[in-house]
Image 1 (tube, helix red, strand yellow):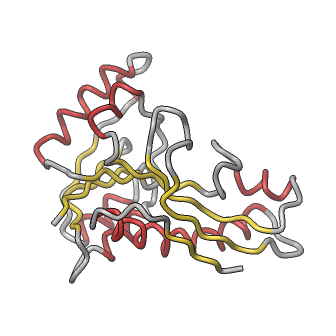
Image 2 (tube, one colour):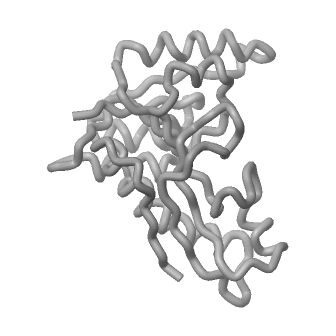
Length: 198
């Protein structure tokens, strides 16, 4: 049974979807929810499910990312996680932090990578006139949103869509895709999961 640490910075809907999935015959369990924001909604979701939480505010470390990451490693070490899932964690982690997690860290991104790395993905898809959009789960490497793709879910772009309506439909698929990928990944299978809601 793999031990999973979840990192989130906000409401934590993807983290909640993962926590909800990790029961029964699922080959992993949530052992920690970490956030860099003491007001993040994900904390209540974790506590409601009995998952331990840790908070480390990045702001006191302003300008010293290495010090923040060293403290972060110290905070999460006792939980002995096998897999780290980024689920709306809004801090870019450096190569130094990522190195010991190589091949063991996942992230969900709201685009069909390699399209639209970074932010504002839904508006960028609309501006490009794309017929379809979606989300991807990938392994995390030092290059932003560029690791091996482990799953994708596609949605059709509808006439009249704006960034908010498109984001809402993509989020529904994120909550299906991430648990499906984690189930496979925790079992040692890196075959990509493909979902099509178009």
